[in-house]
Image: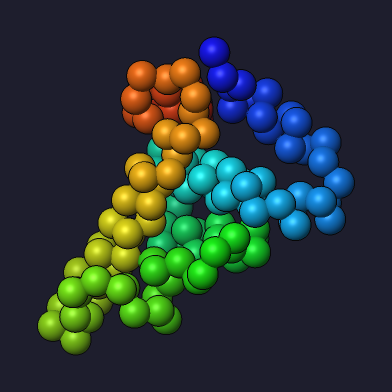
Length: 124
Protein backbone atom coordinates (compact mmCIF):
# COMPACT_ATOMS: atom_id res chain seq x y z
CA UNK A 1 0.00 0.00 0.00
CA UNK A 2 1.29 3.46 -0.82
CA UNK A 3 2.42 6.14 1.56
CA UNK A 4 -0.55 7.95 3.12
CA UNK A 5 -0.89 11.72 2.91
CA UNK A 6 0.11 12.30 6.54
CA UNK A 7 3.34 10.32 6.08
CA UNK A 8 4.06 12.24 2.89
CA UNK A 9 3.46 15.58 4.63
CA UNK A 10 5.81 14.65 7.46
CA UNK A 11 8.48 13.59 4.97
CA UNK A 12 8.05 16.78 2.92
CA UNK A 13 8.12 18.98 6.02
CA UNK A 14 11.54 17.58 6.89
CA UNK A 15 13.06 18.49 3.53
CA UNK A 16 15.48 21.36 3.12
CA UNK A 17 13.55 24.33 1.70
CA UNK A 18 16.01 24.83 -1.18
CA UNK A 19 15.75 21.18 -2.15
CA UNK A 20 11.99 21.32 -1.87
CA UNK A 21 11.69 24.39 -4.09
CA UNK A 22 13.91 22.74 -6.69
CA UNK A 23 11.84 19.55 -6.68
CA UNK A 24 8.96 19.94 -9.11
CA UNK A 25 7.30 16.79 -7.84
CA UNK A 26 7.27 18.20 -4.32
CA UNK A 27 5.85 21.48 -5.59
CA UNK A 28 3.07 19.62 -7.35
CA UNK A 29 2.21 17.69 -4.17
CA UNK A 30 1.96 20.89 -2.14
CA UNK A 31 -0.19 22.49 -4.83
CA UNK A 32 -2.50 19.48 -4.93
CA UNK A 33 -2.79 19.43 -1.14
CA UNK A 34 -3.76 23.10 -1.14
CA UNK A 35 -6.33 22.56 -3.89
CA UNK A 36 -7.67 19.46 -2.17
CA UNK A 37 -8.15 21.40 1.05
CA UNK A 38 -9.88 24.17 -0.93
CA UNK A 39 -12.22 21.74 -2.65
CA UNK A 40 -13.21 20.21 0.70
CA UNK A 41 -13.59 23.59 2.44
CA UNK A 42 -14.66 25.90 -0.36
CA UNK A 43 -17.56 27.32 1.64
CA UNK A 44 -15.06 28.67 4.22
CA UNK A 45 -13.18 30.76 1.65
CA UNK A 46 -14.46 34.15 0.47
CA UNK A 47 -12.78 33.92 -2.95
CA UNK A 48 -11.94 30.31 -3.89
CA UNK A 49 -10.42 31.31 -7.23
CA UNK A 50 -8.02 33.71 -5.53
CA UNK A 51 -7.10 30.97 -3.04
CA UNK A 52 -6.40 28.56 -5.94
CA UNK A 53 -4.21 31.19 -7.60
CA UNK A 54 -2.35 31.71 -4.31
CA UNK A 55 -1.78 27.96 -3.95
CA UNK A 56 0.03 27.92 -7.29
CA UNK A 57 1.98 31.09 -6.47
CA UNK A 58 3.04 29.74 -3.08
CA UNK A 59 4.75 26.70 -4.61
CA UNK A 60 6.37 28.56 -7.51
CA UNK A 61 4.12 26.68 -9.92
CA UNK A 62 6.08 23.73 -11.28
CA UNK A 63 5.01 24.06 -14.91
CA UNK A 64 3.57 26.91 -16.92
CA UNK A 65 1.24 29.39 -15.22
CA UNK A 66 -2.05 27.65 -14.49
CA UNK A 67 -4.94 28.22 -16.83
CA UNK A 68 -7.16 29.11 -13.87
CA UNK A 69 -5.31 32.40 -13.23
CA UNK A 70 -7.67 35.26 -14.03
CA UNK A 71 -5.12 37.12 -16.15
CA UNK A 72 -4.44 34.08 -18.39
CA UNK A 73 -6.55 32.97 -21.32
CA UNK A 74 -8.37 29.78 -20.27
CA UNK A 75 -6.79 27.83 -23.14
CA UNK A 76 -10.02 26.30 -24.33
CA UNK A 77 -12.90 27.44 -26.52
CA UNK A 78 -14.27 29.61 -23.70
CA UNK A 79 -14.70 33.26 -24.72
CA UNK A 80 -14.82 35.42 -21.57
CA UNK A 81 -16.31 38.30 -23.55
CA UNK A 82 -19.44 36.22 -24.17
CA UNK A 83 -20.06 35.55 -20.46
CA UNK A 84 -20.72 37.36 -17.22
CA UNK A 85 -18.10 37.78 -14.51
CA UNK A 86 -19.87 35.14 -12.40
CA UNK A 87 -19.84 32.68 -15.32
CA UNK A 88 -16.15 33.37 -16.01
CA UNK A 89 -15.17 32.82 -12.37
CA UNK A 90 -17.21 29.60 -12.29
CA UNK A 91 -15.43 28.44 -15.45
CA UNK A 92 -11.99 29.15 -13.97
CA UNK A 93 -12.95 27.39 -10.74
CA UNK A 94 -13.90 24.41 -12.88
CA UNK A 95 -10.43 24.42 -14.45
CA UNK A 96 -8.56 24.10 -11.13
CA UNK A 97 -11.03 21.43 -9.99
CA UNK A 98 -10.42 19.48 -13.21
CA UNK A 99 -6.66 19.81 -12.63
CA UNK A 100 -7.11 18.42 -9.13
CA UNK A 101 -9.21 15.46 -10.36
CA UNK A 102 -6.67 14.71 -13.07
CA UNK A 103 -3.49 14.85 -10.98
CA UNK A 104 -4.42 14.02 -7.37
CA UNK A 105 -5.10 10.27 -7.84
CA UNK A 106 -1.43 9.73 -8.68
CA UNK A 107 -0.50 10.90 -5.19
CA UNK A 108 -3.12 8.83 -3.40
CA UNK A 109 -1.62 5.43 -4.17
CA UNK A 110 -3.55 2.38 -3.09
CA UNK A 111 -6.87 4.17 -3.04
CA UNK A 112 -9.75 2.88 -5.14
CA UNK A 113 -10.72 6.36 -6.29
CA UNK A 114 -9.75 9.95 -5.69
CA UNK A 115 -12.90 10.79 -3.75
CA UNK A 116 -12.77 7.80 -1.43
CA UNK A 117 -9.03 8.15 -0.94
CA UNK A 118 -9.24 11.83 -0.09
CA UNK A 119 -12.26 11.65 2.20
CA UNK A 120 -10.06 11.32 5.29
CA UNK A 121 -8.48 14.70 4.53
CA UNK A 122 -11.68 16.64 5.09
CA UNK A 123 -11.43 19.14 7.88
CA UNK A 124 -13.48 18.91 11.00
